[in-house]
Image 1: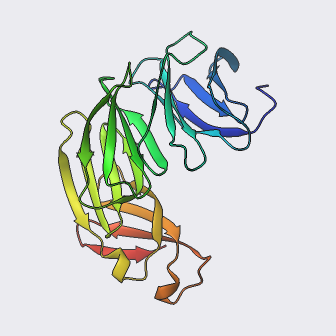
Image 2: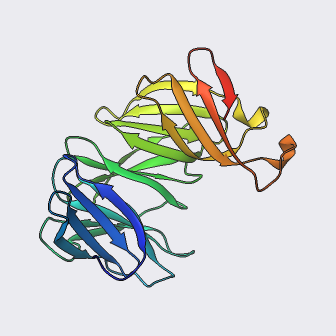
Length: 232
């Protein structure tokens, strides 16, 4: 059994053997999936349940170093903390100039940490070891959702555009115009792209202006080839 507190986030290591689990008291336990045992324990600084929590976790590339996001109440900024494998306390930390962090991850080389925020006009980049700030990726418009997989960051923008960025080159790979804001679509806060890169799933609360209940959860699929929106 793990710590006797609620779970606030989790992340798999690159090889899938280890699972880092964050708990409401600020503990990060690393589980060995093969043995079902906790093999490492870390302690985030500044967590005060329920006011402050760990809202994001990621392993640094193929290493067992971990970066964690602390969701702190306004006006305090969210904070990133870096944990070196085997060292219980964070050895680097930095405040993030974003309204609310919605995605964190690293490139496969372990060079940079990428941080996207809700309604943020840029993706913040930090050195994956020291958390020294690097040149950001400037977005065409503020982001509402983001997903980082396989060295690609996919971002949903407030104007209905889905943009994809290569994490190694930091360059835009592709851009799709969904016209979601004009189609009665939801205010997107979750997205996922199919392995074929043809379909993008977009989910969030419906827009009452589109004639839907304000509390209705809606999911749409955007076909990048036909440029069609399909309601699920």
